[in-house]
Length: 325
Ligand SMILES: [Ca+2]
Ligand SMILES: [Ca+2]
Image (cartoon, rainbow, N blue to C red):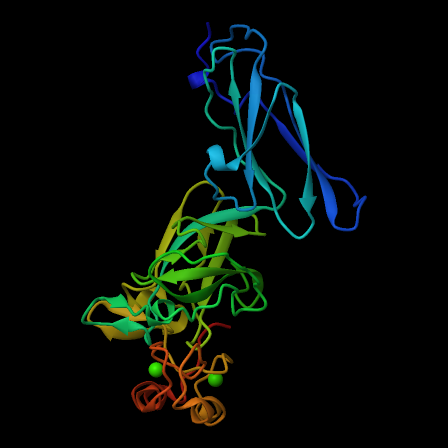
């Protein structure tokens, strides 16, 4: 009996992924193949049958478990129909005939990705007394299940607990930060953590290769911010960036001191054009004052457009602009 628990895939299994040309209008065939495992880590021959459990999902941060188990096979290849507008990620575990399982193979995917974790505070939602952000919008059922950022479309069947609002995360070129390499919608939790749609902290940022990237964050009625320097990101080691604890985290000093030791994004950009100007008041606040709901001019995110949105936020910031190039 061979114990596969310590079997290493890194030297024994290789993966290829290929898309074939679409044969049907809406589906591509996704093919996954790998080299057979024929021996264990100590070089002993492995006796058949061994089988391969294939786990997969549309996010690179998925957890391989019963829910993400797609198939088990004794073959060394696998085919499935894929939706052409989605990315897919896979990992494989091999089992011997006694049911001993190996470690998971390296992840493979249809698009490159990097991972990271992020923390930021929105001025409008911040409640210094509670050291946390208001979740009135969620408590009143007002946060849409579809991201408001149309350039980074995303949808979820349900929201996790303690959500403040949607947030857009961008990775920008490490040499030329005006170049947006990817943008993706996530959720902001009341403690400042940016979370995946299922609530996990690890963010899979899809569509870029490992390397140096500036991280930018954009909210629908706050001024966008960017990391002071590019971060070295890759697909296996988590880089945690916390915008909330120092003015020095922000590119061109683009953050706002909220209370001693706490920094955040500036509120009051109703039309999300990167500037707090008269039109944010005249074209949004003035038309929405007195209304409830998920509104652009609700600068403190309490689900009501009121005088304090103008007096305590817009008036203090008019003339300010985002420092993100
Ligand atoms: Ca504006
Ligand atoms: Ca308000």
